[in-house]
Image (cartoon, rainbow, N blue to C red; front, side, top):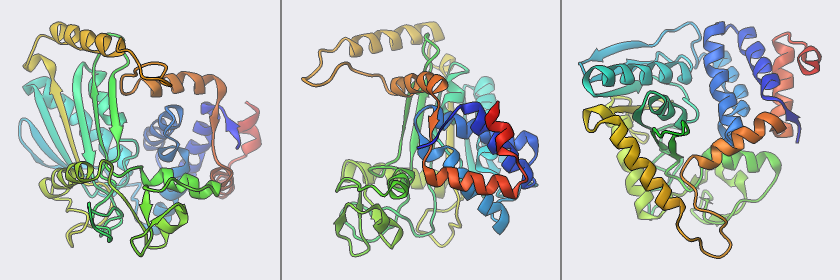
Length: 348
């Protein structure tokens, strides 16, 4: 697989987006997000998404000229209409608004509607943690009708319905929980499909509702499964309620739902509950004791959620980012369309 420095991929992505009419400010918002995803090891939410976004621009599904707007607001809550701009642009605005409300009133909750794919959910929870707050984000997603089977079912009704949370720490690297309520995110199946690799049984069912290890079956009428059997299913339903029903974006299998991410975000100001220093003391004590836990055979150490991602980021900043041949092919083709000289970018 090709390996590139983060700065190279960033410049390529900026050039592609701006070549298709995206403002420099919005292109920067999106590329900051995609590169961070790649650096943290979440390649399913990284630069492989550039082709999708450009396709949506061409198809009119992504309006690069629109500006997200607050359409309902109270001192602690708000609904933001993304107007089908980049999801990252809308979601960044949404979490910034939630944080601002939490600064003033100790908590802020924001819903997003008409919002395109927002990417790696943990990035928005991190925004709150970087301001010494607790951040929470969750969303549903397309296609309409769902891509995930409910527990015990053999037809899709739900989406991958991811959830993320971040908690500040003294080290500056937050507790970071970020996962789909399906066994894996759809993007991880897509990467296996691009590579021509099999997937573990238990990830998906084919269109007949039978277990399969062929990732291509997902894109031929198949469906993902929820993690943890009935537990992941229950959590997925809750996320569809908060991201879809509460915000007005619509639940994935409802006629009201169009596409994109119906999103619910929450910022909690620690000072509204406990002095920040006391809270950080308690969190540090908890993490220290958890990490000191003796391990079972074959396990080197106990990790705090997010710890591995920050280690991967440190390594990839030095070693570079691997992308699939298919992703590189798509970036090369888009760069030509946008009039970019890739040789100039890759020399630097």
